[in-house]
Image (cartoon, rainbow, N blue to C red; front, side, top):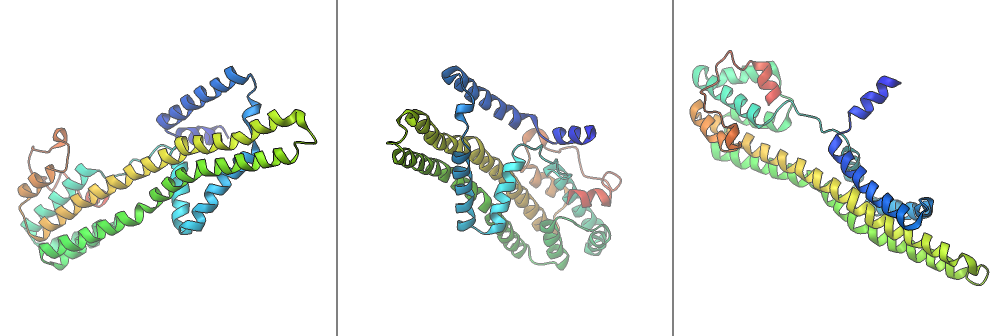
Length: 287
C-alpha cells in the first residue's frame, strides 16, 4: 500500500499542484477570514448542478470519444507529463542517419531497415512508406502536410470542448442560483428566519461555476493546446525530413535544413552521424 501511494504521488507533477494549492489557499483563507465558517461554502446541490450540467451539455454537443478525451485532459492536468522517447533533436538525428544510409547504400537498404526495426509512430511510418515508394518530393510534401493538418483538426476538438465547458460553467452557476432563489421564495411565508442561509447557498452555484471555469477547464484547455501544437510542429519537421529523403539530399544539407526547426542553442554543427553513433533501434525509437 505504501509503494502504491508513493507511485501515485510521484506521478503528479509539482507545478500544477502548487498552482492549485496556492489558489485553494487564497480562496479558503479568504473564506475563513470573511465568514469564520468553512462549511458554509459547501453545497452539494450547487456542485451537482454546475458539474453535471456542464458535462451533460458537452455530451449533447460533441462526440462521446471527444468528450472523454477532454475529461482525460483534466485528469492529466495534474499528472506529470510522460517524457517521450523522441524529441526534435532525436528525430533530426534519425532522419540524418536515413539520409546517410540512402546516399551510401541506396533506397533498398532504407526499406530493409524500416521492415527490420519497425516504426511505431504512424505519421513517421506513413512518410517512410512514401519515401520508399519514391513519390516525387512535391507529392510527399502535399500528402504529409494534409495528414498533419488533418491530425491537428482532430486533436484540437477536445480543446474546443474544454473551452465550451469553461463558458458553460458560469451559466450553470447562474441557473443554480436562480433555482435556489425560486426555492427560497416558495418557502418565504413559512420560514422567514432561514432567508439569509438559503440565499447564501443559492449563490454558491455561481461561485462554483466561475472557479471551475478559471481553475479547471481553461488551464486544461491551454495545456492540451500546447501539447497539440508541439506535435504539429514535430510533424512539420518530419515532413520536411521526408521530402529531403525522397529528394536524396545529402546528410549535410538535411542537417543544416533541420537545424532551423531547433532552438539556436540546440543546433548540431558537429558533423554527420556515423553508423556507430546511431543504431537502428535508436532510429526506431526516435521515429
